Amino acid sequence: MAAVAAIIFVVMALFGLAWPFLYTYRLKWRRIALDKEIQYFQNRIAVATSDAIPGRATEQVLGPVTGISLIPASNDDEQMLAEREAMHSLIKQALQMGANAVLGLKMTEESYQHTDPKKFLVLPAVTFTATRVTYAGTAAKVAVTNSPGEELRGA
Image (cartoon, rainbow, N blue to C red; front, side):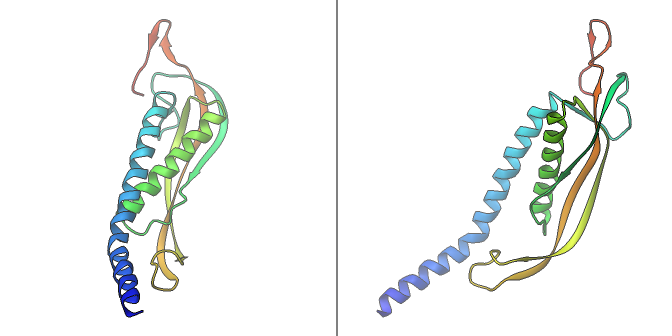
């Protein structure tokens, strides 16, 4: 019986030591996957912090779009992931509206108290200060070309 308890203790200790590395690894690969999707979307939609894209006429304003992060960001890695989640959500919403541009992009961060019962397996629920990232802008259709036969790229 003592041998079984010792084995269980060793397995739990090893898992407890590996948990932070597994969590960081998951965050990294989620961030890489979101980066790839955002790069794919950037070929279909232009994002600008101004109210217009230089050299392109705004043809139609479709309405406001908002992207909110789902992860409660409490460190730099989680913060980067939260920013990408919010941007990904904003771009997907704009594309669903039929937009080819997001104008007037603004980012806000909100801090709040978050209780996560799953943060640590051995300890009870943990409360920490987390950050939620929100991107907001206006979905619009803009002219694809500057003049007939000349297409702008990289805007």
